[in-house]
Amino acid sequence: MIRRALAFQHMDDEPPGLFGEFLREHGAALDIVMLHRGEAIPSLAPYDLLLVLGGAMDVWETAAHPWLVPEKAAIKEWAMKRNRPFLGICLGLQLLAEALGGEVGKARAEVGVGKVGLNGLGFQHPATRGLKPSFKVMQWHHAEVTRLPAGAEVLASSSVTPVQIMSVGRDMLATQFHAELTPALIDRWAHIPQYLHWLDQALGENAYQRVRAEALPLMPQMARMSRALFDNLVGGRAIRAAA
Image 1 (cartoon, rainbow, N blue to C red):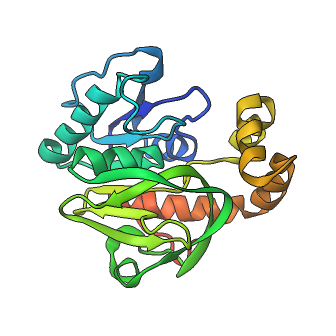
Image 2: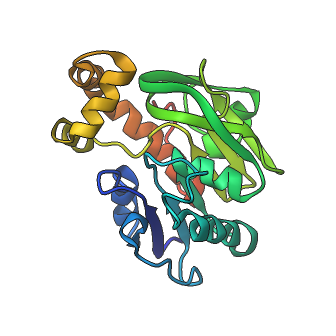
Image 3: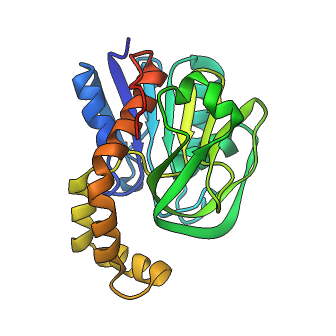
């Protein structure tokens, strides 16, 4: 049972989103460490779940973001010693891979709504139970896992990025896509000039309105997919034919 969860947040505008909602519904307390603001990582011992969120920084940018060093150490400690659920989103997937000995590198940018498909293992794995064979998600990354850590398994890929869902054992799950997003978070992008600039760079002028128009009708399906992943991880009931 998840009674208390810890989240590592890397940017003000990339909060827990859906997973914060799911934890509240689960009756769990959620403590958030704002690493980019200099907040210290507490003892991991009291926590039943670790949630590592996304961010615009890369795993190797430790000079610009020195807190990445203790964060990777904490993730490694969690993975090696805690045997409790871990959920990583985008940067969180990459940090898990590197903390466990894998490698992350620059990749072709993948931004906006895109399709992800389960592979043969994903069809059978308990972490992805209840997901359709393929489903649409929100992507926003320009780096990817280039070498898996020992013990990691790929459950889903896109045409651009081979590692879209990664599991390590039964307790650690991570997605390269943004499974945490809510309509409210997408609406917030309209007020963040840097986000609008990044979208225009990747997709052309006035990209935000196009991405929003495509994403909002899909949000209920995306939320069902995210809930299935969460429920599978924490041992709850999977939602059949999600996404």
